[in-house]
Structure formats: structure tokens, C-alpha cells
Length: 171
Image 1 (cartoon, one colour):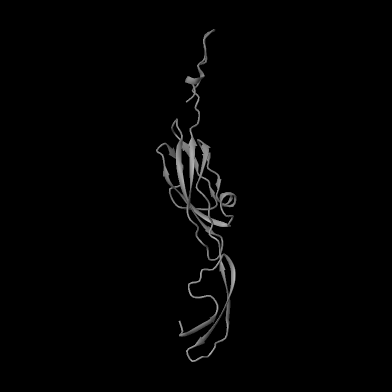
Image 2: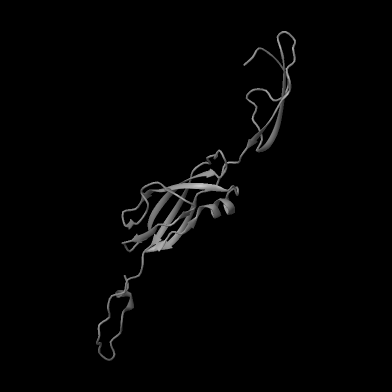
């Protein structure tokens, strides 16, 4: 900082609006000399935002959740890059990524080895696809993995008049 008086332009600490702002500054030093006007632009990028979301898939299905579509449809439509990881999962589910992943699609294939719904929670960190990138607040994707129905092998022979109880054959 040089000693002097700002004649025009935004004060130090000014919060700029989203978009492009042209800044014009001129100063007068303590001797009364006015320097040349300094002109530059400041570009403020938006940070991507999206709410938490819950989805359902079946056992052995791919999550196939498009994070950019989520930001576009329920967030603020900022072109983004993404990092994500499964931060928690119930004991009966497997296949979730436990190391940090990059990309716009959660593409894990989840296996539910139980007879009840299981849950995987993914934490997503979006950043704007600008230079420099602007990180947005993280959001979570809650994936409920429904169990699959397993059918036991039917007996090859039944007697006339016997009733088949299908409920006992489906897991």
C-alpha cells in the first residue's frame, strides 16, 4: 500500500457481484500528484450448489447417478467437476467406492446381500469448471439398495391337488 488518497474505484475489501466488473482506480499521493488511472476487470464465478438427494436402486445395479444433471436440475446449473466417495454404508451392502473418485457419474455396482434395504451415502465435492475452479459446498447422495428376490429351485414332482406356496420360494 502506498500512502495517498483513492480518488476513484472500489475500496479495499470490496465484495464483487457474480460476473465481470470493470475496476477503475486513480490515486493521489501525499504530495498531491495524481497517478495514471489503473483499469482492470474482476471476474467472479459462481460456486456449484445442489441439495442432498435420495435414490433407490435394486441389488446388483449400477448407481448411475449423474452429478452434473443433479446440479443442473435441482441446483444452480453451474458447469462443474466432481470428486466423490462413499462415506458410510450399512453392513449388508458392498461395491461402494471407499477411495476418492473423480467424475460426473457415480458408477458403483452395489450388492445387497440381505433381505432388507441397505444404504450407501456418497459425499460429493463440486467445483466450478472455471479457471481457477471455485469449490461449492458438498452435498450427499443417499442410495437405498433394495434386496433382490431369490427363487429356490422348485421340486420336479408334486402330487395332484397339492398347492404351491410361492411365498416360501421367494427370498
